[in-house]
Image 1: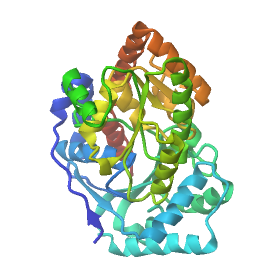
Image 2 (image 1 turned 120 degrees about the vertical axis):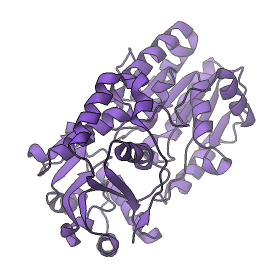
Image 3 (image 1 turned 180 degrees about the horizontal axis):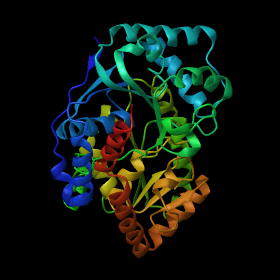
Length: 410
């Protein structure tokens, strides 16, 4: 068997005060027609990325409303994750396809995982490219198969996408964050547009008192009496932590006492992560006011929450971004936000109202200096950003969207 993932218990009722009675009532009504539906989520890892962040909340809520929902993680080794990381980069625009031997590794691991899959599912949701070929080997193990894409496919490397699309066409449905991510060759009423969402009650997003946030930050050497810039993300070239450091240096040229925290987790399906983490350390050049932290420094959900809640400016200066859950997480803390004008970030940020969109380190620095110089501006942006997330990007809305998709299946 594939590795099952254990999740906790959650109740939809606990979210009513945040999302309103109308939405929770709609979810209950949709779920009443799907009682007992056997749903399997299949992903590459249970740790360290947006997919796992979503599923640790979505799965318990699916169960709470009556679905028989499960989550399995595929079996893989370093050679597989090296190949799929290369694929991920190519699908987001890096002009390098997998070699024939790497494609064989990818295909062999998908076939091996397919053999381990149990049968009898009503719906199997395959998350991202890593397990995308499982279906072709065992299509009869589920009545319906859905491919869920979490990455930015707006400008893919054509040979890589062309290799995958024939397999994706065989799915009964596909789900993307944005319409512009849907590749040529997929379309019609089997394509669904559904942005992800965050759990406002999780340790990473629950309300922290200013005193608790300051205490946690102090434990990591941050001076809570000085301004703090912070980016929370994987250590990945597309997240551009190097560009954030460059922006920070421009800011400190005018406001010398500003600090920077780059906070991330090292994912098991990202073998390049350590290489880029070390490159980021090198670019920081030993600056004591740049804190570069990850989960191996005892940085977990509460610590991330504290950094975001304490920061004077939150940043996500991505150059490619499928959606960016860290954007909604940042906005939910009611802190002023600056993000890259790419991918799913503009869906979450209305430029000038709920935050700022930028396209370079220089623009990021300019907006940071503006926010730090006008506290009232930062408060206005923070309040508007939190309300925008409340209306559009909390998990009960995502649950409703999935129930609608299930209800539309044959």
